[in-house]
Every structure is written in C-alpha cells, then in structure tokens.
Image (cartoon, rainbow, N blue to C red):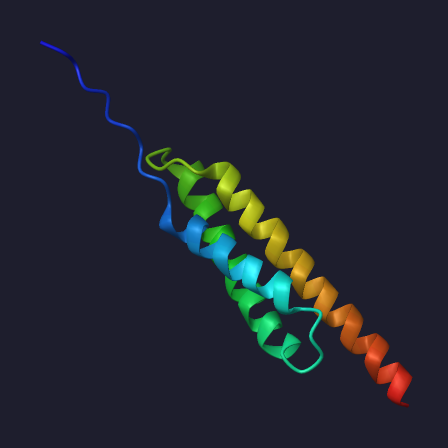
Length: 93
C-alpha cells in the first residue's frame, strides 16, 4: 500500500492579504480612490501579520512566504498613498 503524504494547508489570511495588498497597490495612484486603497492596504497588512503569526507559531500551516509578500505589498501601498496625498495637498496649498 502507498503512504499518502498530507500537505500542510496554506493559510487563508495570507491569500486574502495578498489580494487586498494587490488591490491597494493598483489603486493607490488614483487620486480619490486611494483613500479606499489605504483601507485595503491596512487590512492586507493586518491579514499578512496574522498569517505570518499562524505559520510561525505551531507550524501547522504553510505559506510563510505568502504572508511576508502580503505584508510587504500592503505596507508599500499604504506608504505610496500617504506620500501621494501629502504631495497633492502641498500642491493644492
């Protein structure tokens, strides 16, 4: 008989965090919509941190790289939003 290896499940928070971070990164350059992009970025960063914690603590789930990518993309998108909003507000003054 063959032994079946059970793979660790990938963390769902990491996947959703990457999706939210990607949406935030794509919409962070649009002037009015980037307010919502900041919210997506914050949610993606929180989900990435939760996914990173869940892969590190017990080791029951895989997807640590996915969690790190979610965290990085989300933080970069929030930084872009804040930088562009500061630049645009200075230009309007």
